[in-house]
Image (cartoon, rainbow, N blue to C red; front, top):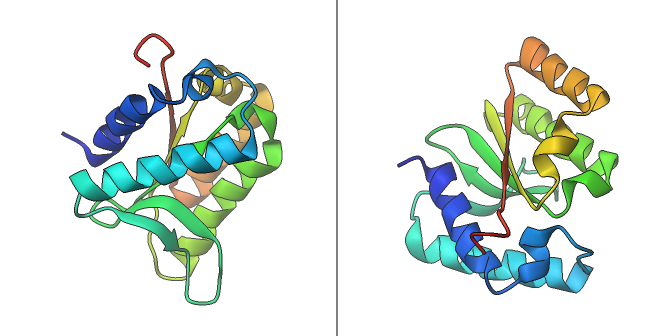
Length: 150
């Protein structure tokens, strides 16, 4: 099974303890931080090859939530993705910067709450996603936590 899928399944399991996360309702910074902390702990226990809070480069303080070096994949937790264009764009830029600094990222996976997939279908975001794929080879996909599974 793909490590991204395993991270998603773990996130789905952790979301059971945080119903506001999968439902896409207003999430406080504290709830978001606690969810991510719990998810990181569970991923660390279950997946050995995943790097957690991996720095983009030696000079940058920016990190990926998860980085899978074996597949050059970054995983970002986007809660909620629809709330901020700048977070979406920043996460894409982090991948380009990391690749430029010697940490290859060919795939970015957003794991988000309800509304993540539909938001990614907005024309402006589709244009950005096509651009990073065509110009940089960065494939982006969205995985949405389900309130039914949580």
